[in-house]
Length: 239
Image (cartoon, rainbow, N blue to C red; front, side, top):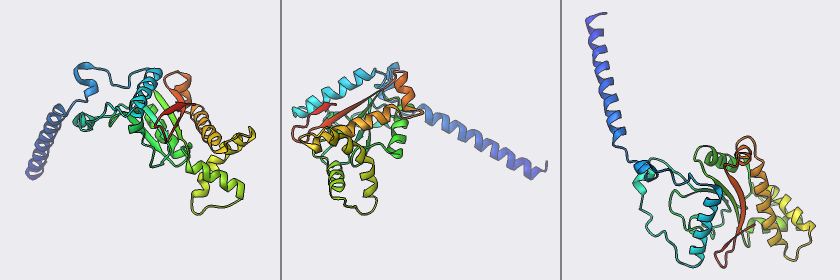
């Protein structure tokens, strides 16, 4: 090796060692998530029933206008290193529905997937799979709500034979099976019945979604439930 090449190699080697040392030092001072402080288990290392109890108790506080979560900066630094949500919520995109507020949970407590009509499509399913497989959520909830505009639009399109512009027709296609099933029972309020049936359909689709979610359900590692949020009272009722 020539002297020039030797000097370059030595310089690169020293730089590499210094860089590696700096990286190790940096890793040593990274903030530790609160969930792992002093050897504690992550907050989502609980049973599906415990997770459901936690968020439903939170909803009771929210409906009573007595939330426990008021300081949203608490734990912010610790959350940089990871997230340990206790539940994944498939919610409607309706601006009047805010799962974190409705269940009185703080940042990092819920993994929320939102789409108008809270139906299961491939993109939403992939997000739920991520929460189940890699974030360790013990609970998955499909959350509908009263007076859902997406479901109401589907009812009107099916009744009048109208066709909506853009990609809205794809939304109608995915909600249509729930409306058609609800109509068979001839309910007094088709909108309410279709909203609940849409939630049930979402629960069935997730429960049987291969290869990830269905396997976790069979192994009893997670539970998939359906619920409905009442816009007027703020209360969530299980379906």
